Image (cartoon, rainbow, N blue to C red):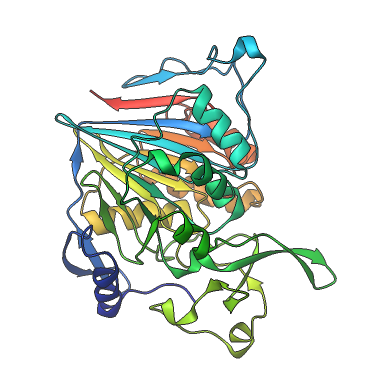
Length: 378
Ligand SMILES: [Fe+2]
């Protein structure tokens, strides 16, 4: 069930997203699978604004980090009206990149609720109308839940040809949570009809894509390291009631009869992708969002598709909160070999990861909270 990569995938991605795809060829990875290659655009600077995360700590430390500017949201508009930044189990990042005089803005993921997202976008003074593209990392409610309410409020002011980039068909599957005794409760579904009604064009690709000439996605992440997908939701393959994912939309299609019959199975997030930038004089910035595919796997994928080995920053949810101590220690040991300058654990990374990072890589660890902004480069 793990993704492998084929020429068919490349062709599928090209057909679906030809305007944005910049692919320079194929190479073989360590397992002999074809790895699509892209030319990663070089940007002069990148700003990562945390719009929604699990907590807002106005006293969080680490304001001075060598090599970057850190802005913490301590005072902001709305204070006199008793309004505050909202935090929840979910993630949303507003990304601004600069290349010469050219600026690009992206909203990556939409948190659990539009109430938190729209509130925080307003209080942080972020320019929603200027967004160039939207990106969803994977089809989990804590990353897609705020999308419909966000579009309800802001779509009319945004560019006419708005695109939403996704790692593949898997983002549209019904998700479920286990409720015990074999029963499930709904964990939502990202509905294409909602996107269509909002005139948002979904751009699906299992292969890496360059977006708006500044960002790039990794495409589906091969599982090549010691990491495995830790327990999370259950996924239902297939379509019903006008929503769901089309199994024919998977390039690597090996579904069991039970899966084809709609039986929920442990979620492997086959089409989770990371959003990345190549920042001048620094290296790659890899944003995992939830990291179900594994943070080592994801960093390696970003390196392989670009040919750029230097990783400047690893950002996002690392999904290690429920990892055993042994598993966490092995991931940490592997992470240290990658020589990443800055590590930004957010969202589902886990207090266990934070404690391990404080111990094992204190110089790299940057503490994150709702409202923080990190700027690399000029
Ligand atoms: Fe998540």
